[in-house]
Image 1 (cartoon, rainbow, N blue to C red):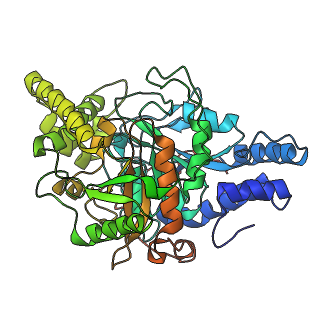
Image 2: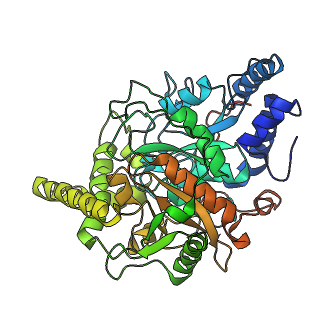
Image 3: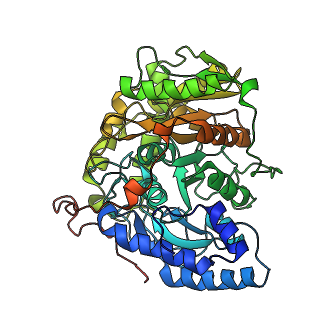
Length: 486
């Protein structure tokens, strides 16, 4: 079945229905892509090949007998390794933790498998999902799908690369400050952060969500039809709501759209990134939408508050023996980056919490009058593969405030820099208006200029040769093949 451009989940379901392909064909194609690209891109932790093939045979039987479970039956998917697959190890991306075998599927994995979707692999993440880079003391260096010399961003690094390289049509990531949207931007894929509580998860932390990463908006929406189903294990989950996730039509001309280019006074994206976002906004204006630029609405302290509190949370995790067995084995640069919060006094922590509350209030006040808000995903277009991407903190943040408010947001490719680096457009909606966000993203996907449309063949036909992860950083090249099942 192997194709230059892999089929989407929607296309696969249609092919199953027509008898042109089987789920086993699809799974074998995904596994072939993983085998081809993994020596360089290193986006997977565990490839569960034999169970995937067995599940594919069962799904094939259901389709042949006319007893399939729905449009997700037989669709391959991956999940970030912090989203457990029963029987497989979890390390949370760090060599500082002895991998623990998961006793049960996480809610996102469980919901997709109940719908008949087929788990292919767990994907890589940096230590504790704590940095915006593809570097991990457990997995080594995950490399961008478009150029292995480039950083894929993080922390859903492997999921984004898997989506771009066609490892699976649906790939689950998690996002607490941009960890789905940032790697989606750097890899030119769709990355959807649902409303907080829309998708049940475990290890709940305020603002953390799980969401789909895919090549198309329609595939992300299809995944949401299962991911948004209830699971009582998550105390923070929203009450179940009937949503027709396949209804992606929208009249753009009736929308009032805000454009946020400067959340903090004087802090903007690079001119090249901003120009790409402005061209995307003009696409909406040409469709009849009313566009209004949003004035700066955050102070520097407010903008930094979410990251500061999360850094304190990460430091606590690093020093929690229930989570980390050996802090000395974790990424030393990651540990060093968190050191400034180690001695944060209680009063400073309370002030940080107060600053987050102001961040939430100011963000809501700035965007509440709009149906949708557009912004860059990141202020810059990328960095080197072996960079910790600390430079992301040198410019304005466009993503964490929408974790703080719990609002839904999606990244979709809006264009490429002169160097060929993808640039994502962030589309943000009011809380609980997840479908509207996907509808607007789908409209943009259909109407964006030709130069903004990813040519996936460029990322699936080029042979790359790059060195393995540096020995000094990862003595064993990471534990990429720790539990490979082929």
